[in-house]
Image (cartoon, rainbow, N blue to C red; front, side, top):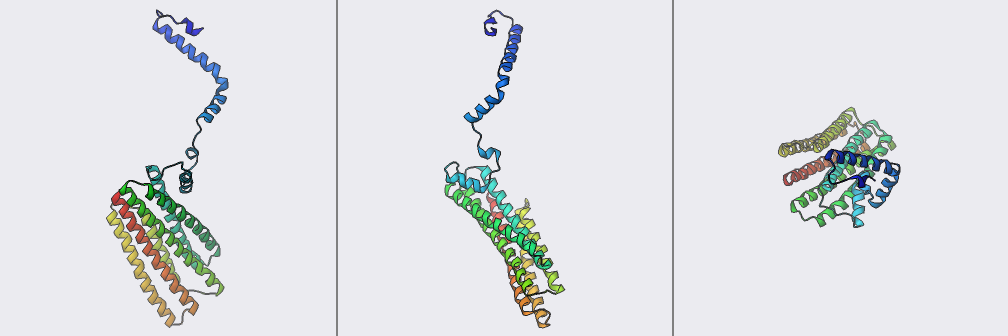
Amino acid sequence: DLVASFTPDMPASQIANMHTLFNICTTLVILPFGNLLAKFAEKLLPDKKSNSEPVSIASLNEEFGRGRTTLGSSAVQTDLLAKEVEHMIRLAGENTEKCFNAIINKDLEMLSEIEKTEEIIDRMNKEISQYISKIIVHSNNKTNAISIEKYFLITGNAERIGDHALNIGGYLNTIIKKSIGFSEQAIDELNKMRDITSKAVDLILNRKVDTTEWLCEISAIEQQIDDMTVNYRESHLERMRQGLCTEEACLLYSELLTDFERIGDHALNIAQAYSKISLND
């Protein structure tokens, strides 16, 4: 018996050797039962599902509904909200680019992609809005609450960008059904609309340390979109006078310009809300 072998006057080196021998013997005894002990430990101390699977806004809403988590008190949860909102903006931006390409190339397959992405954007808007409403109710931090409210405004504007992108893409059905064609000048204008809106979304997703300078850049782009809309309407009217486009094409292009202008407005709203978050963080 190893324990019985220890005596008060035993040298320290001998005690150390006996201790090492004891550890080796113990390991050899329990080694065959390692897997069983591991499974037993898992049953006693089960790992939370969130540790092994990605956390999502939807799962947090569900956990909160069951009383298993507290919203608004975790920096990790707030960081998750910021990333989900950015993801939503990115999807709306991608749809905006695709909608112009669908019109230019008369690509119905791309329109189908736009519609599927819009469904995702709508679902994210609902989930994020529910999450934010719960955080606002349960948050005791005034500064944090202001930032959360701004995220709510950002989410709403991102959803509206997605709506306008879907509107633009939706014109393709009419274009194909009525065999509507655009002049080379109109196609060039559509390409420029696509490029400027993509630039606005890219700037939103790449905020700079100097928030004032960053906001000025996006404000300048929004003004450029307004100017382009005015100029394109004038060009559009001139094409009408010259009989270079059909009545259906005229009406459709006018609607398209309205959606284009609204996208710029919502992009600026998002940037202004983000600037407030930076000031309060």
